[in-house]
Image 1 (cartoon, rainbow, N blue to C red):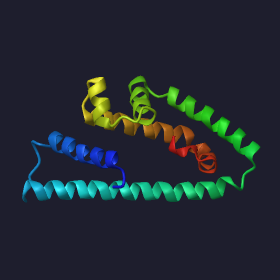
Image 2: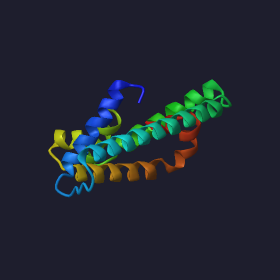
Image 3: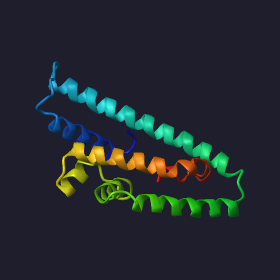
Length: 152
């Protein structure tokens, strides 16, 4: 990783994951090689994710440059309104978890600690929130692609 803070975060996440799965974790090699492999794989996954985002951003620039700026602004405003309505229509716990994850950028474990829930409950609630959001916004998929707001 090029960013020291990001590398530390990945390493910390590996340790947190190990701690959470400590009762079911079966390490068949040395702990050093297990940790090295886990951090390496997490780092590679992060790099892959960054590359996908970067490729998609470049594609979005190409798409958005074909739409007039005034039209794009109108579409973006309409879409933002629909997204806000969809978020507010979520059940309360789903909405809170969704906002903490997407807007506060908290990890599921942090949300679980904050709300005194299990990580699995947070995962289930996020899955439910995303399903509801996809359903409510399915008619706006083209606008999401054109305006690039899909990554809200």
